[in-house]
Image (cartoon, rainbow, N blue to C red; front, side, top):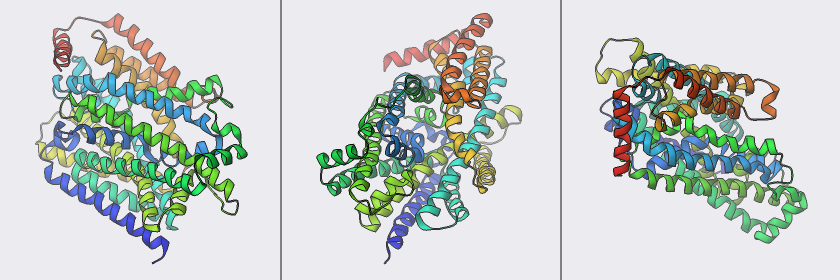
Length: 492
């Protein structure tokens, strides 16, 4: 068999496994809560790795290695910022959000939690939150489909549209069938594949290069600054990179995992597993890039056309074609895990936060599950239409969307969990100011000096605080739920 045949067999086995998990989850899905939140029954390992896989996307295996290959460890500041942000997210948000969402009318989405948290006239906040999620994540999903099309085009020579359709159909199939459980279980498998791939590729590369000493000498001969975090860094650049960590507090597809953990006690175990996975994976991605620099310096007859393909090419050079196919599956896993998570959150916003709020008519739980599946299908079709004509601006929106969600939702989530006096009006005002600031700042030359999440996050906090102080009125129900959440946390 040819090398490509071996690699295709590995990819087909992987894709078949994902659909099989979707069918298994379908048989376990009984009601709308199961479909959107897995019945709050996830264990710590599944919660941690599914959150990590949903977070990292193809950036972990392609974007970060490509950036470090070109510019060196100065690009590693963003990884440091993300690791700090992810740890703080697990530490500060996960336990409180898990308890508070259940105490506050068993909320199963972020917008429904905000609605239930503030009581009174907060329906507008829920609808606005749902619309923000719907709009941004539709484009976010389309960017993943674009990445899938490019993956099959560059790896196997298929047309861009064929690759896009393959990725879309598989992701739609298991998300449509199994909902949150399918997405979480597949993300767990995908996170595991990504982890082992990022460990064995750099280890194999070190042997290929002749060891650590030879590898470092080869890197220095290319550019000694590649091994420095500071040589080419600027203060604003480091702040902007570290500020990516602020985005975690407002990413719906990540923090929804906190709401689904079986018990608040397990958030500590999940945090340790998740951060351990993240650190080792990021180190593996950075090591792959630098080892790639050394390999291509030692072998000038071998060329690398696209720096972002360094992980894929090194895997193909080091391993048997079937194992190299598993490396390719890891890249596909990174793409699909994020797309499926975002697809489900978008569907939940459409059904739980917009449909339920605007349409007062009561329908059966089975109908809501079917509406959720229709939402997955509808969002997929719209995202597919956006992605059909490959457009770099859609891929560029990933960075913008991360800042947009972080600046609009992040401060409000933190204040809602830690400050009893925040009001629905304050939350709505802060959310709008944060989103608008991120949009305007990110659309101008200012974003080249400072990442837009920084001013957006800060202004959101300030506005939410001031407006809440001006509009605060004591509400016994809100105070009782806040105190009950703290009571449960103190017991655990």
